[in-house]
Image (cartoon, rainbow, N blue to C red):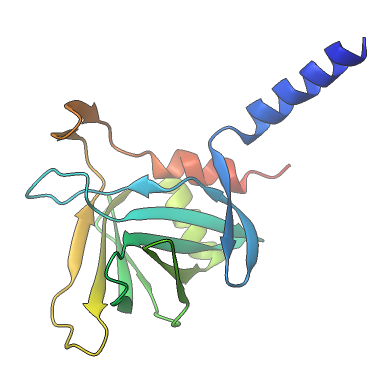
Length: 173
């Protein structure tokens, strides 16, 4: 009987946490969407950054994750989130970033209003500046949320449904 109860609890916990991750940042631990990879429009490669949305009460964070094998890169400036309806969410650079195992992470605050917009309208692209330390930074990188063919793995990658992921993350329990 104890085994059946334990199995039931594990199944409920698995169903309840499906599609969500825990994220540790400089400021604490947060429930978050799992990291999702964006792509370059021109190449259709899967070498773009990964993004996640972390929950902080009714507001949240956008977390950028980028390979940083040279350990000389930094995120600089604003991040622009382009939505499918043509609007733009602009996030200010608060200088919150860190490096773990050859990966660079940047954290950008999302207001409750911005989170609510992301629950309703999908992300079409994200633009940000990734610069070498001590160098001029004159061009932004833009990555897209679109369906593409991963040429290395020869598989189709579907478009990410951010409103669904974010709505599930912020659902009242």
